[in-house]
Image (cartoon, rainbow, N blue to C red; front, side, top):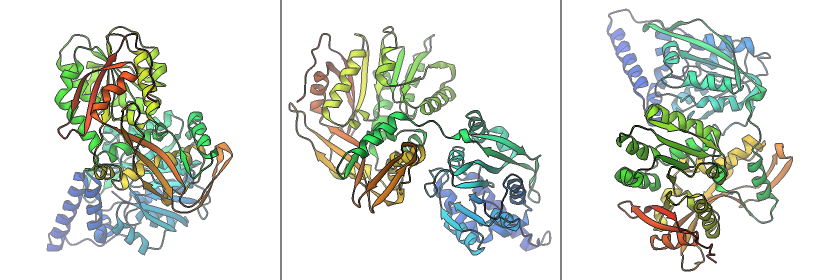
Length: 569
């Protein structure tokens, strides 16, 4: 829950009608708080609670905001000039506590507009803005604050543990992060906060300075509940090394002339990008994931056959591959299936392994491999036979049809005669359906912005993300050997001129109003052309599966022996 006020409110006499009403009201609000499952639940709860929130917390004797403020002050000198972020500020209780001991440069963010309105009335904050802690905090650049405080933010249904990644990002090296949490929630680690803090510590992003002894959390409501306050130092080593491949792609894009700068879609992916994509795919109009999952749900056993090794190119979420893994377990064989996810992101691989291990335990032998697809596939033994899967219509993200054939030819060269390659391909459809899928509102926009977000965070850029709008035109391509395709171009168009400095590259970038950064493409195929496309790469189409609407296809290819390379030009 958000922070609480510093003033005590007189309590109604026990047994009085007012006392009963207060008790019922508090029970109702706490029940809603612990039962919240979604952003909508939280927003409605705190908007409804804003008027009585300060009084309610004073009534139950909560004082965690004052303990947190004192802890922060102990490790954050120069209070009058220090910049402090109050994340999940609510009505401003932590702001009151910090202001009372000398802190004057306070910024607050919260999910609830009504809570923020109450905080604004107290005139404690220099800046207040609405923000969802489950998403990137694009309002602030890296290393902006001297300290951050999070009071009551980590509870069931509230902010996720990965919100700490963003807090670490916006706090300067040498700065501090102070947070409160119920002792039982922390120790049970059901929300993953303890594990996340340990992970950040192991990565040398933070180190623990101090933790208080347990104290009563809600003294006049739940005497059994205890809380603690933790304070961490943010370290110089929090920033990972620059991804040289990404930096080279960015340099190439902006050194070229013209008003459209193209960067390969593969660079949109990192841990933040994967989380944003998962959220984006939950939009009702984004049909691709549901269509592909429906095919896998209905055909997993048929698709898997008897393979003992399953290789996934680009692991992403475990949502799709889990259907094949479940089918493998249902075969009830003595040896576990070997699952090899391949990705260039070590973080994505670690996340996938955690998810699969948690769901399937020792029934699946997970062997993550970090690297480029071609390099890793070359290192995998020919025997036993393998099923290689490439989900998500990612084959459509390649720059042109010739690059698509080259990619498939590379896969063909790594297949043994008994191996199979399963690839998802999105099919041509009405442009309005595609516009609904690719312009699905804030979740979709935030995902595509991740390319520019990476430039800011990893390359030291200062692009104004709020100045970009998205355009997604659907453009027919020139037919090649009878293969007809059309492509959605994902463009971020700046609505004002921008002069940007990429510090790690010592590079100046100028964008005129209307200039665009193309962050990806999504090619759509006709189902009658898929066999011809495979043949151009030396692959034979063996089987196909479609969703009920015939919008999406899963395609099984095998190697054509002694197939001579052909051009599609």
